[in-house]
Image (cartoon, rainbow, N blue to C red; front, side):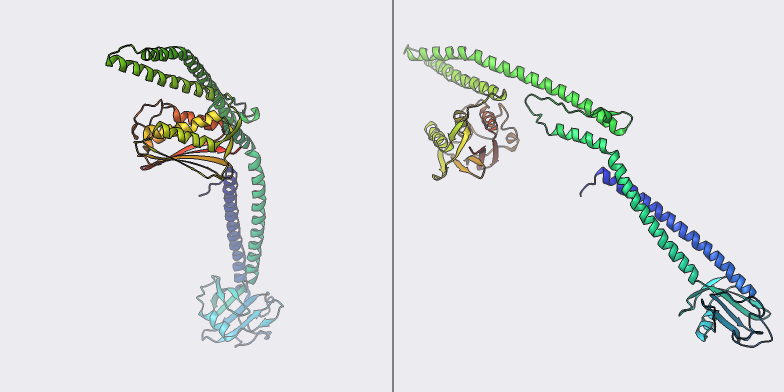
Length: 480
């Protein structure tokens, strides 16, 4: 369901209320006027009935009789009036209808029968439809000395008046509603401009990369839009306070990260010398050929291997510190085909117990601009990850291809897969997949985070997809 904007909601909502108010006013006006017109018409009907005169000496006769019938010497009948005089025996003494041109016309038998069939109360006007050209009439009836007199007035004028009033009300209400909607749209748009400006500030801040690096948020809501008297002003003021707190928090975070990077870099540099000494003395002791007990031999072997592993960890920490600090990498043309061939060959020599395959089309020349040594480290780390966390006999296929804008390196193995819980934090530092994948050798937990950092420094991306029997790491780098 698509949500409406606040501007549209206000315009439509207020417009609907105005329309309902206009409709109620129109209906009330129409009903009141109709009631008023009917009251006047009923008074005219009773007046017409009152002036109708009955001459007992006359029998049935038409309106041409001057001395008989209903008119006598009284006033001439009004236009649109009707008269019917019937004696006690049901004989029509007189009947006529005065048309708009003043001519009097006799009522026919059907019309007289319709009037006689109507349930007319004594001097109570009732609407009767006579059909044909006459249409509806408002009729009243009374008895005088045994003679039943019926008289009434046509509803044509009343219906014309109410119809004209309805047209006028609809036209006026429609025009008024249109003007209200136009004015309301302009007023709402003008009223919500401060809110639009506040939203624009929030959008500009949201578009800033706040995840890492030096962060500065210069955007603030303008002072006219921070008036605490108005609702929008309170929102603007609160947003400014929030942005100030966020900026302070991000500066504190950046300061802590800078301190941590400096500590890691300094500590790594300081550890290089003693580690080199430990490795040197261990190798010297092993190389002298002096007799050693088996326990001493194992101890020196462990010292040599662990010092080497510690040195690798120090180098990894130094590299991450440099990447986090944004130190520029070398920019040169790198042939990824040669790089992939060398990486797969090295993996095969290092671990012949697994099957290492390379899928590269000879006609494809896949080149990017970047740091050759660091990109080699990316592929080496991915292959080392497969070697560390899959059982012997695993088949590992490295594929190199290109699409329209990217070079794609994919490393796929048919190992046991990665647990979904581990997969979510796989590229975090010191993350390990030991809980879900077998390993024969320890790892620092930095290989994949280093690969991600290097790929990101090349404006690329790295992703993983895993299920039992298949794990795929995909690296995408912009073509050079």
